[in-house]
Image 1 (cartoon, protein in one colour):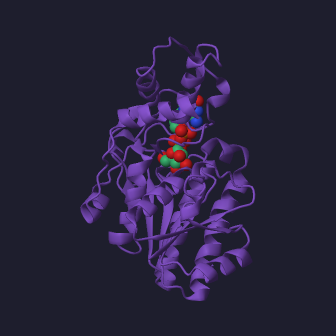
Image 2 (cartoon, rainbow, N blue to C red):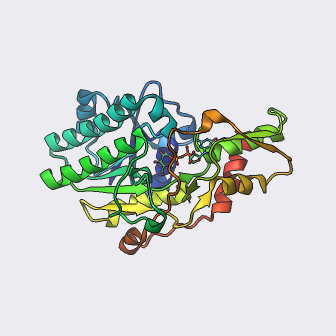
Image 3 (cartoon, protein in one colour):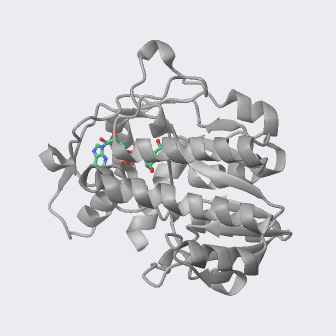
Length: 316
Ligand code: GDD
């Protein structure tokens, strides 16, 4: 069984690589770009077949897939930070959509016999009314930022290629996930890094924050990557599944949980630059369809994830 992971040098990609290697029954391949940061993957590189490939270039993607001939593709590569999508909407939309088109077109033209997982997002639901929570897959999609629109495009493109060409594509709408290695601009990591810096005396005892009232449904990335595997193992081709814990925490609770693991006393200050033109107020998901289909359930408690994340920043 040969699996290809796009975005393998990234946060979820590196955890997925680790999980696939730990299984012992998967040959792991991944794409990287010349400018990719390999830090998260460096302990695994001798166990992965890494191929340089610019996913925005259709010719490179075609050649790469012709060479690798994967049985499974996990398509994780994307511009995934919401604030960047406000600053660079066209870049986010073009990048996220075009890379996927190149993969699907190459699979189609090469007539590859492979299953494809597409990492979509709970951000697609966007504006969710309180009576709609926890959201199910059939909830209306009301995106509130360009990133969310790009994920809807990826999501529906996956649906369309399944319908039009019968390519076995399974989409997951993953709710927030975090853990060691999370990029420093995402909220959990950002707060954890600030606390670790304060502990070391590298930052004054003040944590800068954005909107603390937003509610999010956090899972541990190590549980999520197992779900990605199960999606291809047991999911129905053409389907879309929510991946979520089912519990919502305010961002204030995230901060307080992290602070409960430290002795430092900090002030909390709102930084206007961290506020968004429109923020998704609440995202909490119903993943019962996926759980029933695959037997998946998150194993790692929220507090453990937060503690591991803080410890990650203490030693990085
Ligand atoms: N980044 C950041 N920094 N967010 C903050 C801060 C801060 O200092 N303070 C409050 N927030 C709030 C944001 O306004 C948002 O409501 C929430 O914290 C989470 O922000 P992010 O961690 O940046 O994640 P996200 O929810 O926008 O998107 C993440 O989850 C999606 C799944 O729902 C990303 O991982 C997406 O790629 C993913 O699809």
